[in-house]
Image 1 (cartoon, one colour):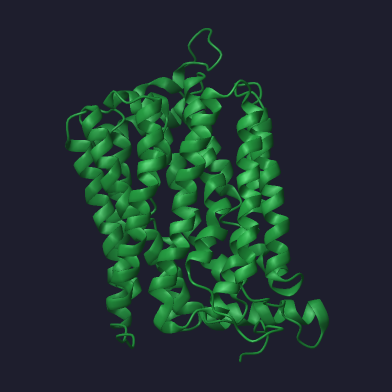
Image 2 (cartoon, one colour):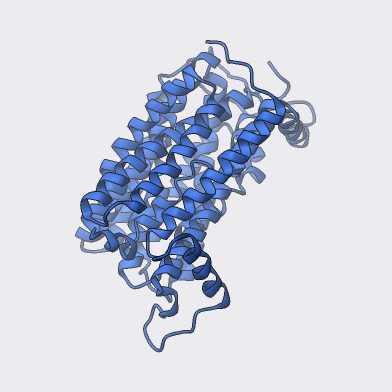
Length: 447
């Protein structure tokens, strides 16, 4: 056992991975509620594509910074206690989001609530990751990754589809938030099947524990596996960033899709397909090197985006390509978890996993914002105030961006965001391949 590694107060009970699925649902559901339900409602209420993209931006803002507070989870309370606290706070955040009217005047406050809820919600994931890293053997990494990400993506589908439905059918929006919050707290019941992993308690107290965590992370990054995994995460590979923009009413309208279609493909149906992709990704990672699988999936996502852009703009194509895209996103998320588990070991698990998750969330964050801006520039909607009134002349950045988009796409439109994502994905995979070749091929993992 490494210095600073988490310990248990009872004989190790290795839970079935479905437990991680149940526990991870609140983490994914909050993102789904923001990325699908609130995103569609904001767009439908007249906010521009750029302003609406800020919702996902606020949700992901803290996600690529969470490595800074991850050591707190490793060295203070037990993962179980952190999970209950963070889930309760996330439930309160969802209630606050739904109770606040969505318009241009309340947008700043809504962004603050989303960012704060996302910060607390990140601890939900950290708590599970700390438990999972200790209880998962090398032979089980692919399988556990699949079940783990099934909870993330299935939860996102649950939060998106159910949240959008409840916001539309219930008499008051706060009721939707109350029901979602209750579902979050119900997931805490799954904690009874996981072992009691304790916080790090090395000599030197909290300060000693924190320095041990920092040393563990630095030692990991100096290894070949740690460096390559970090590089793979920070590049815009397999981000699935287009999903949040495709869920917007103004964008979906290009394919003739409305709330029903968005709720299905970005919610219920999309969740089932992404979950299937998670298990397929876990199967692949058990048979091939996880980093190779992850890079290949990223390349596949780029070609899927191109295929959707080239296809006729019909409702059928919107549904069909979104399903294919969702399956590939499931593959990518499962591949990401396998990449991380193969690199981190068990010591300082919450911090190490959060470090990689932060790296991977950074390209999702900035690329998602860029895709929203690309779509707005192509549609010309950035020149119209969300509250009405006289048109506002486009800024210099929007004029330049529209020209750049025009170079790659002769007839700019919502499909421009798909081509933009594909371009970044292909370039990133090529860059990673070059670095991998310079360092030499990785040894084949033991079966």
